[in-house]
Amino acid sequence: MKKIFWLDTETTGVDCNKHAIIQLSAQIEIDDTVRHVINMRIQPFPGAEISPQALEINGMTEEEIQAFTPLDSSLKTLKNILKRYVNKFNRDDKFVIAGYNVGFDTNFLRAAFDYINDPYYGSWFFPCNRDVMTYVADYITLSGVRLKNYRLETMCEHFGIELKAHDAMSDIEATKQLYEVIQKYLIGARSLEND
Image (cartoon, rainbow, N blue to C red; front, side):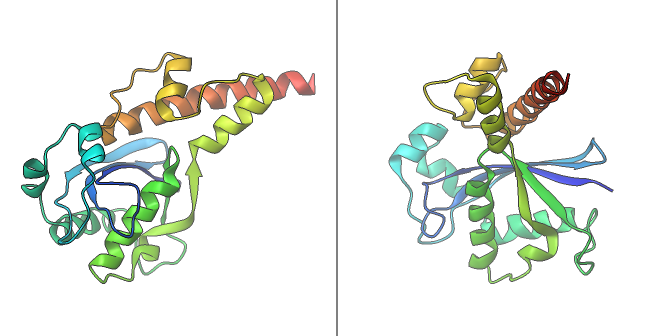
């Protein structure tokens, strides 16, 4: 059974050791079918640094994010959802996390587990991720296309994929579409190489 946890976060900055998640979105996909959609607004943990630039990018105010659900309650809800699909006591039954530049998001999610003193992040998720950005590298290699940068917005613009940037759920939808488009390109390009 193929279990994918499509993940994206919005945060108060870029350092998972001092900044916090303020939006966590995910789609639980089992055997290519979305089974659960998660979209949480999370209050920064006490003492988290809040970058004014991050708030501006996310279009939120400090007052708004302080009214979000506290981290411990949010993670409790998340774990209750996860246990519907994964047996955390079975080392072979876990999610593969997928996303765009997803190491950023997994670092923040792992740090959130650490913050609430929950050592069981690895009970839910395999340590390896499916990062769509690595497929972009294959696309660049095979196509020869060069862009100004390789951020999600730029790749979506290149392929004509709609994206409401800096909304975690929109990022997931766009990432999934980008993955499908690049996979089709890579399969086509490799079959041409083999002809």
